[in-house]
Each structure stands twice: as C-alpha cells, then as structure tokens.
Image 1 (cartoon, one colour):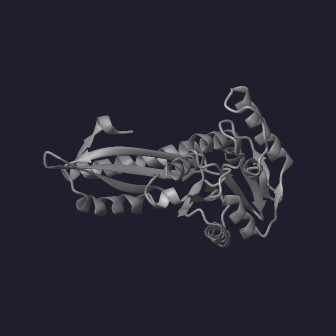
Image 2 (tube, one colour):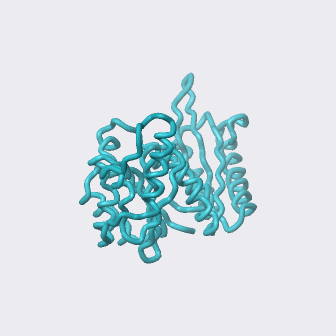
Image 3 (cartoon, one colour):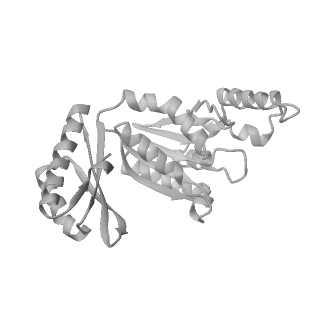
Length: 272
C-alpha cells in the first residue's frame, strides 16, 4: 500500500489558537482509501522549517507527502517557497494557475464583493509555483492546490482552510489514490464494561498472537457509576474487502468471547 506523511503548516497550530482538524481528516480519508499514514508533523510558517521537514520526508521515503496550509496571498504563506527550496526548484508564474486565480476574482467581482479584477503581487503569489508543478482547481477558494512529483514521491500542497482542503482532496486526489489502491481497510469497535484496561491488555495480546494481521487498540472512556468503560477498536487492511471484513469479525469474536469469560460485559448497542 502507498505510504503517506502529512505536514501541517501554521503558527496557529503550534500556539494553540487553531485545532489541527486537517491532519485528522486527511489521516482518516487516506486510511479509508487503503493508504498508510506513517507520520504527521506540525511546523511553523517558516521557509527553513518547511524545507527541512520536506527533505526529512524525502529521506525517509514515502509515496505521498501532503502539506496543508500556507498557500494564500499573505506574507506568512510560505509553503511553496519552502518546497521550492527543498527540491532545488525555481518558483515560476504558472499560467494555468494564474488563470484559476483570475477566474476566482472575476467571480468575486461578479458577486459585488470587489469593484474590479486586479492581479496584485499578493494574488499572483498564489500562482507562483515550484517549476514542474500542476495546479489543482480550488472549488471554494482562490489559492489553487499544487501537485508535483519528485522521483517516485507525489507531493501535494493543499490550502489550510478546511473546506477548501477537503474539496480539492475529494475532487482531484481521491480518484488518484483510489486508482492506485493496493489495500482495503476495515474497522469495527465494541464498547465493554466490567474490566479494567490493565486486565484487558493480556487478553488483547492473546488475540493478536492468533490474528497477527489485525491491529487492536483499547480506548478508555472513563468510569460511570464506578464501572470502567472501554472502547476496543479492531482494524486491518487486506487485498480485498471481504478478507478485511472477515479478519476483523473473527478477531473481534474471539476477543469478546474471552472478555465475557473473564467477567466483562459487551455493549451490543455500541458495536459500530
């Protein structure tokens, strides 16, 4: 399966002002498409930091590097500068990207939010891409997405605005990942009570020995009326959907049987 890394760019993510929902959404979307997210990194709006993070991902070797944030017109939008520096590529005004940006501002003028279309340096900045890049249409915003290849690695840059990021990913990237799909992901969760996590740990290990192709994770959900509540998530990726489904169902059946034998209770209504 394809290996992914995600870089989230933005001072606001590091000072606590903004919750990094983009990385969460991307990781889930990629996993459901059969990809494997190996690492998520958060860095500042700094050319050197961006360049360094990109180079580190390249050195580790990934199929996809997705960078979210820093594509806008303001002074602190530096993602493409950092990417160009990491790849030793010059930044050039891309005609296709410029057409996308101009069209967006024409639409804004048409809605009466601007008096005229003016391609200021700040707006042209959004169309200035590392050489060899392909601009991606942004259905909801002005800054195009950016896709380029470096060796075998696909590098994708997306706006930081969540709605824009999601729309570009769904329309331009999901079909590519789906076409390259080499695995099918499946997961199922069950909620249990009457057993604490430290007692649960050896039971999970027993199931993992019998089913090494699945991953089992326990998520404590606190206590209610003195009773410990835990969510157990079972996941796997297989070559076909039916195999993935069967692996999860068999492992979960064994685990819940063991838990019940140990005095735990399974909440049938909370199985998802």
